Image (tube, rainbow, N blue to C red; front, side, top):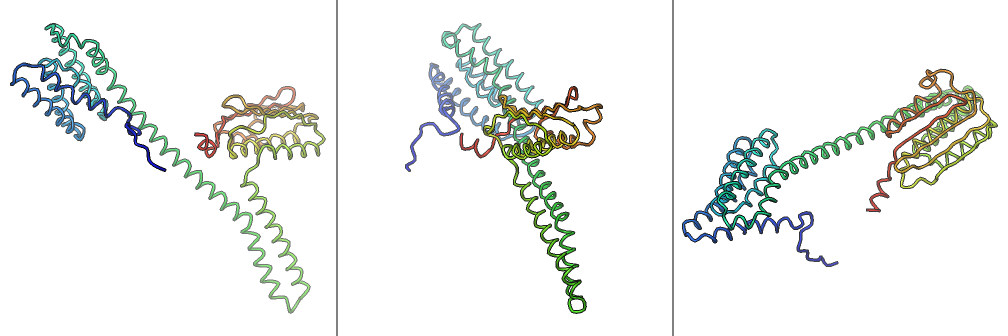
Length: 378
């Protein structure tokens, strides 16, 4: 595919061309002068301004004050001699790029006062060329006031966003590391003991195979049973890692409540729009824990579950007509509610529990857009 020629470069827009016009403009005002000496002085001041402007951008610490004061002096001279005010815009832009807060404030005040004085001198002199530019002069003066703060705050915001991105990447790395450690612990707890047992029983069966064949067969049968148990536990662990969709969880919830002879009234807005599997997995685990509490502790006959999407929020309500919670301590002790609270905090969600006339659990979480789907939409 042929690459199209673009007049405006991507990311820069028309700003380079505006700066180019501003760079040519001083020569127009200089050549308005009838004196050759003044023309030479104006050209020298213009060249000196751009050289100093370049050095100002690459300087640090005290040279920043030196170059900026030189720029302000040239700008005032050009304003008084040639009625050219537009160098003040260059300086305002540069002031907004100064990193040190004290230097920024000092040079901002100096530049604002100097520009205001130069404008007033020209107004008092009532030069015709200057008065013709009054609308543009007002615009430049407003830019001198507002532009530095706008650029300074924008740079601070960019720095904060960059730091936030770094922090988010670090959090993601820590989450991955924690998940790896959890998987390692689960594998060790699930397989470590059973594999050790299989090894010991296999050695024992080999040793007694000739002396006591019946004992050897018994040991090998234990090895077979232990291996099957370990395989089932690994399959269950892998299934949990894969994550559970809410649609699948509702099927299991219905089966559990039917077995407990509790009527289920279900209202939902499935499927959730543009949501991540991670968030659905968190909600599924919370639903599972809440329904388990209903079955074990509530003595209810009806369980009402409602799932709804409200703008950027997902709300899940679990209500039962059981005995309710008698003490506030029950909310944070036992029954898996503390685990639900911790899971929800991980996704910036929260849980509210009401214990009058049965138990009502209200779960609210912000929507987490699936990053892959979001990228496809952009």
